[in-house]
Length: 226
Image (tube, rainbow, N blue to C red; front, side, top):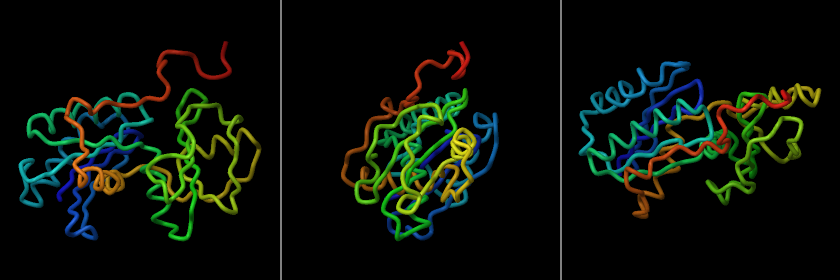
């Protein structure tokens, strides 16, 4: 099964090509490209397909990071997935950006059982959820947006930390920084999480490729400003 995957939920963007018959040979284009997602995500997809002599007709499904994350990036990725999947009649799988980060952290620490993900949500807030390896990609806690001072810290002795929002937590709590297992999501992890869903025939139609913002009010003032 060949899976195309996209992520544009942070300042990074990535596209990945995953073949379940050759999982170790998965390929990814990843770059830090703030405000360039609209211009660079589709060429990354085209490059992957061209380099492997493939077309969309050879792809079995598309996974994408549906959020939470940057509003513009999420809309760009969802719109591109809708266009690609709709034109080729491909099923899609929406993967949580936080789950993709948890998957990367677990991959880097095979002995770890839990990971607490904290992503910078801007406006003085963070997105967060906690995951257990055995129940991935379903979080133990609902994905939510909170101020850093309100985060209930998991014990660092038993829980990995992932995401680019931890510096905000450390600063708000006046805590010494601790290592973060992964800071940015990658499309390759989205593809790997989408694989069992597509293999089970549970992909959704292209029109279901929608972003999940968690924070719905884009225009409200930052936390702490009245």
